[in-house]
Length: 180
Image 1: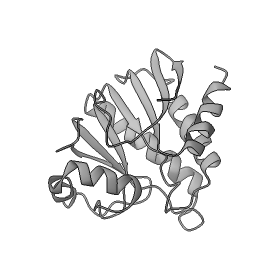
Image 2: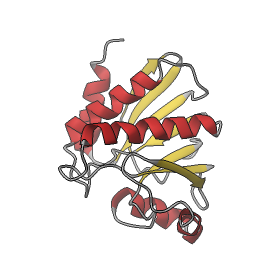
Image 3: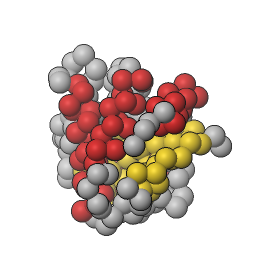
Image 4: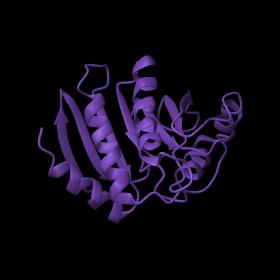
């Protein structure tokens, strides 16, 4: 498994290639959700498939969510305690896309901190079917996480789990070239 590591304010940030639905040892995984919190393709499909029907059943009470929002549920059949569902913006449709995408990461981290989550794994939110350009999305994700870590919190590890080699190298390059 390829990975890149960065430390900010005592928080370890890793960038790895892998499957977001298979992250044992991580308290919460983030689902790049749809508004109804139902199974879908990509990240949502992988997470729902491994979690089982309980995830969708619990999600019904929170749906629909709006772009930028985050809600937390149990993880069911996943090797984690929680799933944090974020609805990213559809690029070119939901505006302002950059602020909505940043809100996904902010709200996921706030939700995680409120629930005492010590480690969280993020996919590349909105870059699949929602069409957000990968490099722009990565810059927003990493900057937002960095800015959120300026304030102390209970999170000790953040993992960016990228399925594609292309996305992995985009995130790795940005992280490896950050100066803090």
